[in-house]
Image 1 (tube, rainbow, N blue to C red):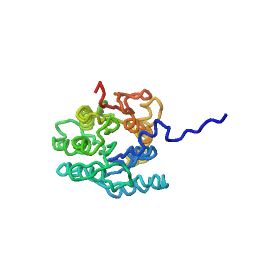
Image 2 (image 1 turned 135 degrees about the vertical axis):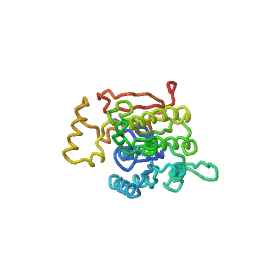
Image 3 (image 1 turned 180 degrees about the vertical axis):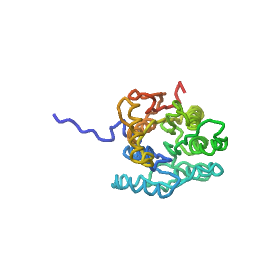
Image 4 (image 1 turned 30 degrees about the vertical axis):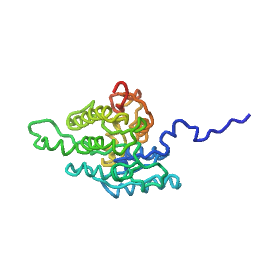
Length: 303
């Protein structure tokens, strides 16, 4: 007797993202690019956004080379939007969301939704991985550049942009439990080291914001993933010897004896998109010293 071959129509896992529309802000490199690849492989149409046009174009080109079949390339687009300027932040986010929900960016038969005078194809998921690497600034009376203004300027991308995205989410997302927003914090929020107080503040503020959004936006789910050491393009900014020394330091802090790769962490974002219920995971069981873990907050009885 021959065993029947399953068809993708019967799959209950990978089909969860098929025909969805996913906006990836910061999806042109590192973890964001790995999440873009994963979403594309799961059948989603993806919109990439970054502050620089050349980065968006490069990421789209890389994806087209990795997945040259038209069934994939027809589901990839992107545009540059700079979210670092507080004075234009909200209008820029609205412009980005208008673009991401435009019926014309993908060949689609999805039913459009009229909002105001505009027709939209609503988003199913927003993935946010934008942010600059936190500077090490000691808390000391002699630290002349440590001012309130420094914090608000440096954390526009990490906290204020997610806040504005949350403000407008209901107008641009499918209002169901199958929809989600997933933001990116970091290990410093729970395990700061000297000189990283600003990063710890931003990470903690983002965690509080996402807990609030989980309640405010229900049934749309709100998540935050807080990676530890992940080998991305940021490591390339270091010299060869310094890069290896930093990686070795992180390796010693993990049970597995390795630094995470972007593709490893991308699975947490895919999980947050696919799981329509909710959990609160505070630390992965395979790591120690809080070097690689993820946190997820969303709408459930325990939100």
